[in-house]
Length: 221
Ligand SMILES: C[S@@+](CC[C@H](N)C(=O)[O-])C[C@H]1O[C@@H](n2cnc3c(N)ncnc32)[C@H](O)[C@@H]1O
Image (cartoon, rainbow, N blue to C red; front, side, top):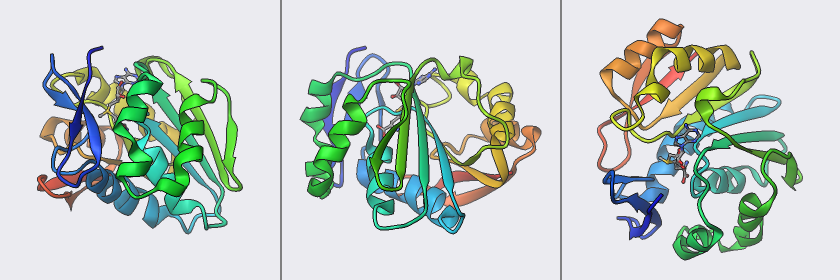
């Protein structure tokens, strides 16, 4: 897959797939977007749980994982972070976009490197409370644990490029994998996607989006 580095509106970097004209993050600010959607609306409301189990669809550049690690390092809550990726990115590209340097998280450089270099499909302890596993697979074929996850960071490419990933059968699979009270959070606010979530049993809320995006979706089991 051909990818081009881009600088986004908050000076953090991201990647563009020129053939699709699709970016990994918002051009208005990659860090700002991830922080607003996944950390503030996904992670923070769930941190009071005794343990927080996160499923991320689309590890990509590892920005969501980095921000989650940074946000939870000084907390005692155990964090289980399972992420899925079908098209891994070369380490050289990861170094070029330099998330730790460009997002003011220089002190996490070593841990961020670990996220990218540990073997796929093996669980590793990254910090005292953070257990991380990245699965190299097509998420459409992934078998998920039932009633297990606390939060789903749903970060696939947009529905026009990957309709199957936003379709009802996937939403049912995700619903089944969450605990009651668990949430799915995503940048996508498409109407058909929201109807698919409702059909699967989710309670769906519209939440104000980050800069450049009016609304995002927060769905609760
Ligand atoms: C919008 S980007 C995610 C950005 C990522 N969360 C980050 O912080 O950089 C979408 C990601 O989903 C991955 N992806 C696309 N289709 C997939 C599939 N069927 N199974 C697993 N991963 C997939 C892409 O390779 C890409 O890394």
